[in-house]
Amino acid sequence: MQLLLLLFLVVTIVTQNGTNGSNNWLMFRGNPQLTGVKEGELPENLEILWTFEASDAVESTAAIYNGIVYFGTLDGTFYAVDFVTGRLKWKMDGADPIKSSPSIYNDTVYFGDELGKFYALNAKTGEKIWTFEAEAEINSSANFYQDKVLFGAYDNFLYCLSAKDGSLVWKFETDGYVHGTPAILNNRAFVTGCDSYFRVIDIPSGKEVQKVDLGAYVAASPAIHNDRAYFGSFGNQVYCIDLEKSKIVWQYEHPKRKFPYYSSAAVTEKVVIVGGRDKMVHALDPKTGEALWTYQAKAKIESSPIIIGNKAIIASTRGIIFIFDIHSGKVLWEFDTASAIASSASFADGKFIIGNDDGIVFCFGKK
Image (tube, rainbow, N blue to C red; front, side):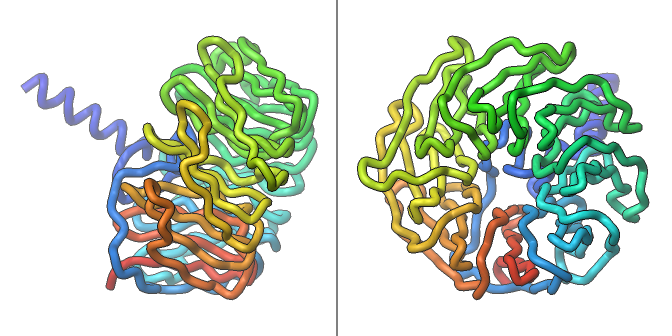
């Protein structure tokens, strides 16, 4: 009886914290390690289930929680839309442009805007719980550790706040903008930024414990997998960092096309997939950095790929959504949304969500 009660409490806590479940996509890249990978299966014959017309461009990647889709727009409107019907549940007006992707924790949705204001809203009602003001714009999305919320800002700081009331726990100053989202594993935050360093921060103390000089600034968020970090840079390279030794394991650079990487990587045991401003999708061996395959998308890729089973979803600035076989690079499906895409896909319950610069949010699945 005591064992059953303990199991019930564990499941209840996990559910309340919003840290599990195939029906949710709780943050940018889908999990605290920012791997962009989720278990599940994409239907063979995808169809548009619904579209939602927002008030402005959608660069914010949607979160999905308890049957609601959350995202922001460049005119500062934040939306909550029914995942099944595509109908508006509630919206909040009055923010500055929102590029930050929302994150969900304990029935609360968190995001920042370009004025530097960071919001915590009731996920069910949209009621404002608290706000916090950084000194410059927030494009970073939130991540969480033991009732603390972490994000970066263009005032060069990585912030750690109380998720409950927004009070400052600590802030760590870097030497440049913190554009990307911090990845979290155990009690460590992994941070890339525009100061050309990869940093590891001890979350309980807010102190730096490791630093790797990259020689180029980074807008992408790091993906953490098997004690290694993976990300691309504006020095036209994709990096693999050994977290234990604090050193670069490998660097990948296309032999001919020298362009930056804004897209964040999706990482599994067998493949690293990332989009480039060289108009290509790159699939790399996570151990060696060797190119497994590439695909010419004919437009820059700002969107970050996600991997569902053996398929990867990524979009281009031409507005084309691609689905690839992650092993062969074969294009399995594509769809033209008729407008540039800077956001990334979110997946839950056999469906995926993505928005474009025309302000149209698409839900794809099987009818």
